[in-house]
Image: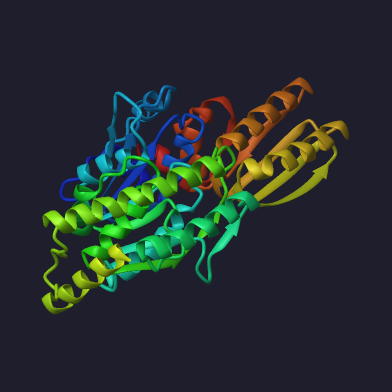
Length: 284
Length: 112
């Protein structure tokens, strides 16, 4: 049934609200995008519910957009940007355009095999989390091909994140995260960082707004061709960390973006305590 | 990725399992070059248990097809798994490579 399910998804538009939206940001991914689309589409179509794929292109100058368009898939929504604005900008456009009950953000390189999504979906379906974060650092994760430089950089930056933003998350940067739809749209409507540190900001906002975030160990295989320059990345990351704290302080002082989780299960008593904790952590 | 090779006369039956990506391509090419050098010109590559194939691996298959043709032989892809079949179609390589599809693929194509 797997191929038949894919062919139906590829040719027949969804009738109602899709259960899942998969957002894939792209920038000059002509070499990788079609295998990634194929792998994701085949697996998710086999799960038996309606879903949509959103390719949020970030001003690619190669043939990425043409390749995706030529695939002509009925439930693939291609978002095109005139200029390259950053990965955060692309993911934000994708998430805000999504219609699914759940929203998965997945990198275009298939570093985390799409089959791992099932692990992220289960806790949200069981109402144990609002956001699940694929993690390469928690017990049970399986990481292959990560260079020593990237490994050292991750360790150092994670320590900074813990101290700087008070986030108790081992891996903020894995490009594989799943959100309950209301949480996704709320968080991404507040999120402002256009660069690659957007994940960090989203998780920081999730903490401030009392969303339940759960780290889930995943398999991760380095995709050759990832051109991460450790020193430059570390510098930009720290810069973004300051920006996130600054934005947090401004929201705090102006009262904008008041911590509020728009969920029926929201507990106001818990909110007050958390607000106070947030202020403490921002001022420390 | 796990690769097994069985050779009879000038035909090699190659079975690949797992993720066939850029990490594996160099070793695969080396193995295929050794087979070519030993006289193989018919390549039968089974992809029924490949769960992901990337562009580097697809390029390696295209190169192998050319080498086999140059040696007066051929490359056949046998029973591609569902994701592999879809990736071959999306990249247009289902038209460029000789594919002997599994029963499910054949039925699915006929149904459309």
